[in-house]
Length: 466
Image 1 (spheres, rainbow, N blue to C red):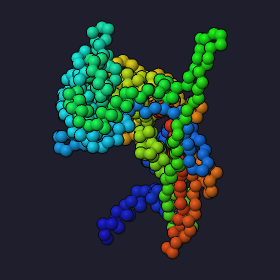
Image 2 (spheres, helix red, strand yellow):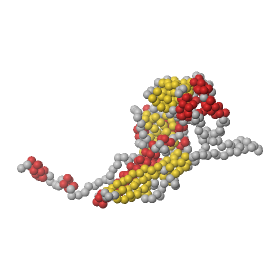
Image 3 (cartoon, rainbow, N blue to C red):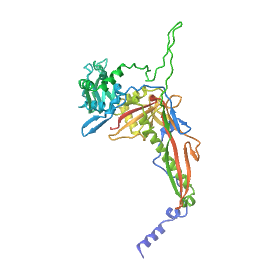
């Protein structure tokens, strides 16, 4: 008698009832629907007010704003040598409309590269202002003397920022602020004497600056929009100013984007394995979940309409010390009215919580849309793992005002499309191929629009390291 047969007989004599393994062959199991680890809370899709648009395009009309050249400059590097892209010098206010490429190239070549370490003063308040600085890499604090012998941080400067461009107009004077490096910093510097030499050699540059200085400045309000002339406090028959609200001549138009996939199901599976769950329906359910995840990813990261890429330069700020602090989030909130919510990577939320704990501050947790979330100044901080974490554990935090009525951020979609299974999402049967495979085209149409620049703000260079 073999050893196997002996073991079976011993098992049979010991066991007094049918084993579960044997019984399972004669019955079915209680089972779940297919689970998917990639499903997240998708707060952005929940919180955006969605506007139904016809024709697939949404035009945002705004009052005319004057460009004042406050953009960031771009640089190229060759080993350790860094040069400014000549055309990017047009981001300096007086060179905004200057198009002479040869003169811009010659001017770019006159910039000298300098390196500063953390804590070094780049410029000091009260010293003569005789140089233009372009910050190519790193981060620096713009400081002003405080009342109690402590410097106050006016702003945080980072890659692409500049200061001292008033020198182009011939205005010398003194530095009204200091700039101190808080990380290793690389700057490109143009000395006033070098610029004067260039100005004397280039007729085109000299004429452009002369015309720009002679041109009367157009009236604008504090938001940079063309001013509406008004009169108040007068009496009698005073002559009232005539005015009109000017509009942008080429308003931005947002076209609906699409995320699509082709779902394939074999007819044998669809016909024979539909009890107790419909296989085709489960495949569609998981596919639509994946499309919704991609939709949120594009709303955050798409170069054309994504929130990270469409925040106005004036609404992008940098952390003061690296990790996200209460001061940084206060700065974000102070730049807009009626902030609806923050959007941050879960690791950024944890980093902010650590900074609060260091200061003995404990932000409130509240019930929000059926979940418990952290808040700051009463504004919910919602998690979103679609916000990227770049090399060096650096990410961003978004804050926004939403809704058409508040001139905020809105989502764009279209409803009542053919074969619709959810708002702006449809499933179309594409037929059966010669291998008996069913095909379904699953599509979702969407985009996002920022109605006015201050509706959206981004805290950049948020460090997550402990």
